[in-house]
Amino acid sequence: MPLSYFNKNDADDLFRIVQTQVTKSLEDPKQNGSSDAKLLEALTNFYECALIEEEEVSQIAYEDEDDVATVRCRVSSVSNDDELCASVKRTMLRVIKRFPRDMSILDYASKLLACCGSETSRTESRVQIRFRSPNSSASSDLWLRFSSPCFSAADVGFRLWASSKAFCAWMLHHPSDILESVQPYIPQKSSVVYLGCGAIPLTGITLAGHLGAEKLILSDMNQECLDVALSNCQSNLILHKPPIISTCKYNWSDDEGAPSGDIIIASACLYEDDHVEILPKAILRCFPKDKNQIPVILALHEEHPGFSAHYPDMFVRYGLNPIKTFVRVKVIEGERLSTIRIVLMMSSENSD
Image (cartoon, rainbow, N blue to C red; front, side):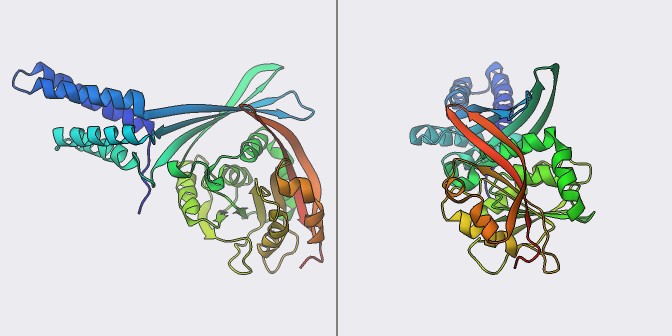
């Protein structure tokens, strides 16, 4: 079943078109103005009560630097309140019945009807990343747009983690740091493997774009995450020459089915204690058979159990050596504070 995409612009357009049509109806004595007035009132209630737009602001402070990045996530969704959802459904059906031949209205109303109360609906997130320096009034912005299923908001695969925000902000602000470190080890036409990409592959889009990678391979154990991630990548092809994007369903515990690439990335990947043991093995399975020196970039939450208990010993045990810490940053999201470490690892020459 395809996922229904919710976009607040759809609601804006529907409201505007129906309002225009109903206004004309109310001015026409031959039309049933009372019925249309009630319809417009119901649509107004939907717009004011059932549509939710929230904003989460993250402040990213770099260690030993004055520059600060701000990440704004504006999330639009339809309320999951049962009573409101029932009201929205009635309203959308009334709109469709009232304007059966207006294809624009039918399209917008059908989208919102499919989203409301559906386990396959999506929210829309508009992500703005802004850099500012205390020494300059200038700032730089990047806007990206993502969607994810409403019902999975608490699922780890459908979240935009602080590590992804921190990595993207660092990569955009200091691109030469990572590029100069990995380019000696990768071919000109490189492929990037993003392990555990989730539904919002912000890290993969950023790195592949700055490397000028030929391919971006999105990997996750959840097929629904991969489907949404692929759609999100295609919605954000803002690059002059975007990479070829593919997906690979891969469980880190499996011996078979690992994607292969020239550079491997992962973020927020140690949120379970046992991940620190299965992740190094999963990374090594992604190495091409003819290579044993592959750059691995990880954006890690220092608060996650796998990091605090075992980093970096378990990686070293499997032949993955941290050779550089690019940066440690503090990410403040409301009352939540995360410390993110972005590291470069290389395999030992004799690693299996």
